[in-house]
Length: 395
Image (cartoon, rainbow, N blue to C red; front, side):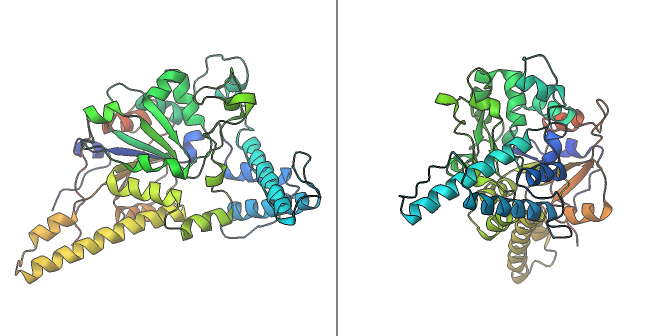
């Protein structure tokens, strides 16, 4: 049985030449984007709903509150269409409803964009809308930018983020310059643009990977910062004519409301399902800025684990029927497959045990430290020289 690794030196024992997918959550944008509660309250106020009163105690509370706020906005705008809605009484009923729905969705998207980028307290956020003074991004985002822009970093296959904000792209573009960003990275925010992000190179580590652009996949859609739609203030995106939003905007793929989550879950071929399952099954994922308690994320991990277990049972039967009493070959095969890593900040014994059965090793990480073996920079640095070890087999 392979020897289990300690969390302190866990990444040093990994196999080399393994493609890495960074899977990012809200913790990466901490200090720049609002937390779930603040974001939800801002949207509720803009929609004319008393914050928190509409869905207290509901499951998936913030998602439910956002859906109810959207329904309130929709009812109000159906009765009094916004001035920019191209609606005429002479239109056929079907056309008029389509134009109204388009205007309502447009207003909803802009309300969410305003709430998403409302925080101007951090110097890095203020520098984006004011004079371009030098300002450092928050600690975790800064660590990721330093690591992703290293010339010797050839292990990153893709970045998958559940954040709808573009602070990662902006920070990378500030570090590399707009042209440098476009040479090394590309933003994948639309379902039709996701196919190429699923592809793997023949040689995942080394020369080929260093020659391709690393896709930054927004699995829950993307709303670009308002500055990206204006000439003179755009960084990673090319502004459109007449100050229109960049084509990278993906409001159709947004996952905020409760119905968005259920639609994504119920559609096997949804953009998020394809992107996340491909990452989990074809690369070693490193989870950063996530609590790992999201039901959809646990569902994805459980899907991959169940498939691996079913394949192992078929393998076991082959050796059993062949009379292989030791079944050593089957047990060795069971230990194969990607071994994922979670940079965690607050250990939870129950969650850790559950994730270990899903092929994830939790590495305690000190998010505030700037040096030492458990700081974010040290954890990421170890990935450049790491080799993914086989899973320990539980008899």
